[in-house]
Length: 82
Image (cartoon, rainbow, N blue to C red; front, side):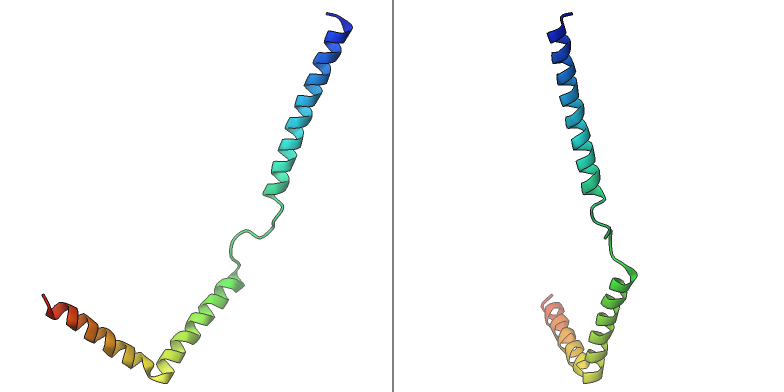
């Protein structure tokens, strides 16, 4: 094997290993770049609080009974036709 052939093989190997290393490190950096993984307990608590406030407003204003009456009327209209 001549000196130039060995040098060429060494350089090609170095290029391939460097490319693989750069790809591997880039993928690892992308995977762990963000530390936010899913919802936190405070976010779930906030959503529950909003739902409770909406339900409380419906019950407190009396609009809940009006909604119930209209739903019952709509169900009665659908079932009366059968």
